[in-house]
Image (tube, rainbow, N blue to C red; front, side):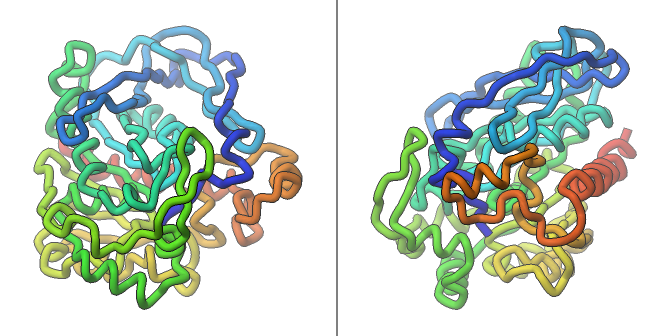
Length: 361
């Protein structure tokens, strides 16, 4: 499933976020830093955000708050906590951004992890095209480039534990996390999936004839998946430095090669947002979990795909209605609050990574 967060009615509004100052104690201080990492695959610098356990630094600032979404408190450029820490590379959903994942990344930093993720070019908020969406190998290279850069960095090389690296992915980011873990996908299988389920969100996106550039909606030709480079789409992208994966509503779920799944030798923790009977075909992970030798599957009841977005601010639903937004961005489909859903997700994902990465010390 491809999550669209570059909603037409919201693009301009969410482009401008603001910061508020608040206090935080050093014992729970989360640092954040923006860096660039060069991608050989793309021949460009990637914008990367890092969250990490911090020893001391300036007052925490609520970052990436908008008219719709709550922000996340973190201390900009705080001093990283000494010692070696596991690294989790994080791939956001299509049309989203790594900053919108701050609510989860900051929690993992408090639990002792360094979390780093890019804004994947041309599949991020305000900069997203159907033609770039299936180029998952580029996303995988983004993640591998971050691992290489941090491991060799004077600032991060001494505190990133190269033997304890995991990957976390949501939606299209979940597909990238699958591929970096060793899964291979069939281009024909993905095209067949869209012919079978044309109403799936990613398939509608490919056929819709729109894209986003500089936060403006533009017209493009509908995408025929069979025009994508088959060799690149189906190639092996396993990065052996990845020791554990958490995959939330991974897209391309219907197109992964069965034999490649059976050969994955690391823990693969799948999470579907919703009860088993409510999960749509595009992200249904029960077969993926069953086929991977060390796979597991959890469900978050009374949640939907949008529940992975940040918490909505008071008055956000009324504002969304006012600007003509039709997607249920702030409605999680049940009686649970998004804060409650996030609390369960944060605890679950931190526990999964702690059991697979912390225990290898």
